[in-house]
Length: 83
Image 1 (spheres, one colour):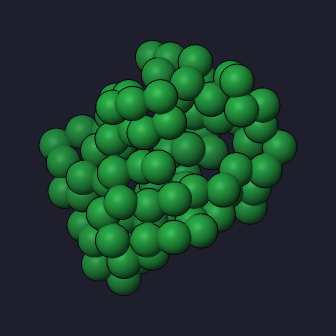
Image 2 (image 1 turned 30 degrees about the vertical axis):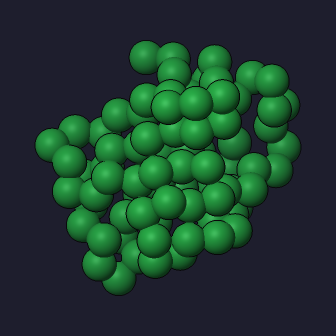
Image 3 (image 1 turned 135 degrees about the vertical axis):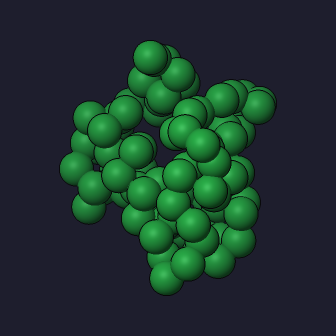
């Protein structure tokens, strides 16, 4: 589960729980801009194609459930929190 904070001053990812993250994005939540930036950020951090990331729930909400295809579940925290 990912909690998105749009219109932040910089992009960052913090772990809030075992499978919960807070992602700060610079894009506004208008016309899907924040969703697009979230997919782009996750794609770069996890080294997978953006087509392998799907927002399963929460398209218009701040709390989102994301499906990832082609990434080892055990490596997700390490990859997301790496600087």
